[in-house]
Length: 297
Ligand code: C5P
Image (cartoon, rainbow, N blue to C red):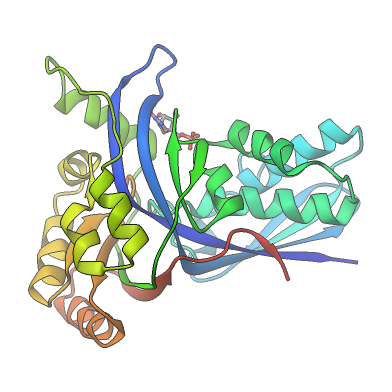
């Protein structure tokens, strides 16, 4: 018997970053929006815990116990006092190390898949706690939709979304390490007072209205200067998408994937074509939001 879970990528429509905390993490006001690019995580009983992966970027995915999917199985098995002996197979479609929570998606997906396979009956809020231990973005991968993440991003409040948003995502050549981007953020802000991260009420209104122009006017990512400092070529991709008519162009999370919010589907197709023609990125995808969280299929 196997269980398969489908789990979405995310984009941050607001990523407001505070000063580094004593534990090294940064307090955030992080508005997550799940987008319709998915990984599928399948768990099957096996002799021992192992992870396999398929997909265009599969070679870049670690298959050892650093993989968040393996860590999720280990965490749930430990909590339930059982052995973690499952084969976890990841059909990967979310960009790897791209700032779209692909690793977090696999963690949340494996957790829900193992919970279902083992019938542990773990309450949803305990699953969310395990997710938070696995990583700051993992709880959102479980819940999907749209949410405000505070603390290091793991404390979620659900948000209303009043319509469908059309996105284009451009994958860069290579990845960026999230800790390196946060370290660069710290370096760029050395000697400056960093304000407390606060969610923008205008952005919440824009999300609730479903109006892409209103969302574009308030969208923002405090990690973008740090990501551009480490990966200056992203500026060319952002410019190409803006010239092609995107309402907003920004780095997704810690990057290096760039995200383009568009007026409607035809506009998304036009921006995607222009980005491909620009030669400034490795691959281009369109997707809509919001998307459901981790779901057994
Ligand atoms: O929580 P997660 O393991 O995904 O975080 C990866 C790294 O990103 C952390 O080790 C830290 O360097 C950085 N981070 C941060 N502040 C956050 C979230 C992540 O500094 N709120």
